[in-house]
Image (cartoon, rainbow, N blue to C red):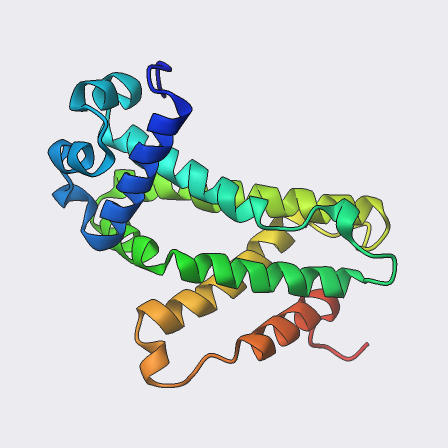
Length: 203
């Protein structure tokens, strides 16, 4: 994606500025001049490093997913008294917090993805799919510890949990739901985790 011409600090400046611009205007409205002015990095260096606007978006998506994943406590920090249910609820609260912090960015990105299929594919591959695979790794470790059914489809389960959690939040926040009814996040976390682990049928 890049030729390694920018220092880590310059890359951070470009990513921070790109995220800020993408959170306030549509992707197709952002110019190289705006990114240069906002980041303080020359247009020549930005082009030489990233080569295209799509690569800049990919880098932003990869970084934001890494930051979200980094906010999740390490499995080794789980207390002996904590259960998988406790761990999932902590994870769900963090995910809601991380998504909420990026609502403006996601709002603009959804619009762009609908209008531009290439952006949609990039968003899915770099953010949705990779996020699902990270959560699948989390579940696989718990499966190895005997905390999940042996025959559970871990990747499908990961997709369902993340889609349900993020989908509810985004519909409420971005598609008018909050004007109709408030989102009870504690109830969402509690009930979604319970249904995820135990289902809705009689035991």
